[in-house]
Length: 351
Image (cartoon, rainbow, N blue to C red; front, side, top):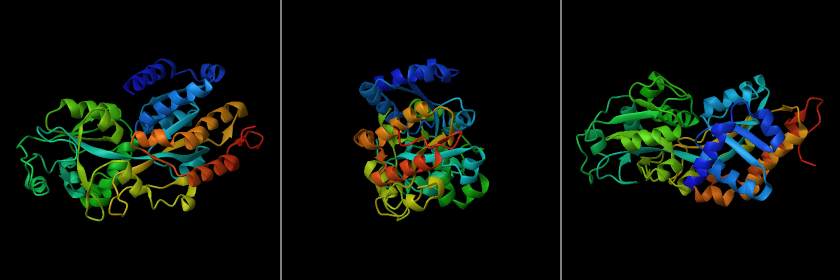
């Protein structure tokens, strides 16, 4: 798996910028954006190329970068973990759809503390990122973990340095559980962090967290597993402490009402439910409504169609939640309705 990540990342780094025309002629699909879904997109790309011979060059540059690239038409599609508002989609001639669901998790580097052993609540997590709780044996943390011997070690706060949908999910959650966070910092893909060091991408935050004694960071769950990081349990909206995994992400997504979400705009943080993971969310694909090349557009959409119908098991193996087939059907209806050539002809379904 790690070899797949390295190979795809290397190909993307060499071939990405300024290669849209080359990709079009060589049967490659180009995309850029969120690091949150990168592990599953990488594996899907490997499987799809083995079946079809068509490659995907996807660069995980963060949701903010993905939005900029698709607006500039540098890539075939962008990816963002923050759904764009309908007005912003209309302004830029875009549509969006949810591709896969997962969760962002707090990770820590505390001597003797393993995965799932530390418990945190939303208000305590917010206080740490506000710089109000500065040591691991602070009474607010110790009170949630009476069975753990927490050190007096200083907390090293790690956050994203780039525009990031993972940051949007994280800060959206903190804004819901902490009025002070909402008033002072708020929720966005990029915020003015009160304290801490920044890492680029989920990869950068994972690396910083692994190397920094006393660290706390937040990453998509697959990155925590890849890097063997100790993740924390979180207290959810129902008051239960839960571990991050596909089941708790799925519980958070269980009540997602995609049918009534305008332009698929739906945020899944702090959902009710006994087993729900509170920092869950979907990752979205951004795509231009008006397309110049029907054949190329069909090639891109065929990849996502394949992923919806064939990629579920792979997503689950990587602790993501695949989109239900009824949601995939809604998305394909949107492709048929909204994606057209310059003269107004529908591009999907592919002929």
